[in-house]
Length: 342
Ligand code: NCD
Ligand code: ZN
Image (cartoon, rainbow, N blue to C red):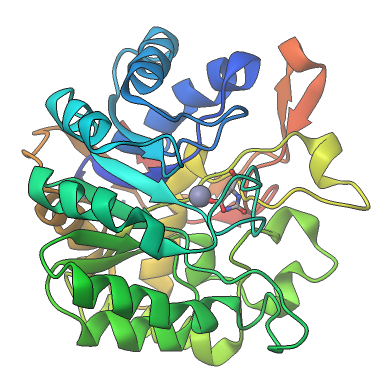
């Protein structure tokens, strides 16, 4: 039987929710093969300051002590230069920006980056990372919709990078050829995360299939090809952020479905399957742990996982008893050829 040993994964973009859902999903992360995660702040209400982030971290540690949590704040009007200093002193890693209204819990996102320039300047000084959800809100006059929302966003990224060349910026969960090309071109302080599902899906796979629906949506085959190619090139500016975003079944199998794909529970098995199919398994280790570690200036975890090349049936659902509902994982019910042994 073929097996490979890899460093435990760094999942540098994850949604762990709160309350009962937090208690359910957080322990599943380890089983998926990740040992350290960058936790998104888009709770309701969102995590707006250091105190709230540290409190949230405590809840996560209670739910699963054997995971490392890197915390982020939601870029919001109450942030001050003093709060940024405090965040850095308390080990907060990044500040996440959501454009208004483009995704789950982004009603409080922003429209104009310039008002945040003093904050960005302090982040640059304190070595905090700016995590960007890079989509423009839909706009009829400008012909912007979910299929080109990321591409239309890219000039904003260029502008911020130009003004703050030392500020580390991650364009999160990229989905387009245009984004791949721009990230390659910009300086070494700019990188991107890629999800497992965006290496697999195109628009045909989510239209009418809510469990594959997430923001940004998967785009055209040519875009997926660009993501796959950059992985195969082993480019260190592109690394894993699963964007695992659990929503209960009743909210996914709904006429107005929530955006988000739940991938934490089998993350490294999905990636092994995808990389194997693309004939580039040898690049998985760098993608899933080293490149992200380097960009985020993290110490290695010195923990390992084993990926085994054997049949693995993804559960068709998880029962979330405490919420009397189910959670449907990515590739639910599918038989794949890789399994994680933690
Ligand atoms: C995320 C969520 O559900 O919190 N949804 C998603 O489709 N990715 C929010 C986000 O990261 O956009
Ligand atoms: Zn996300």
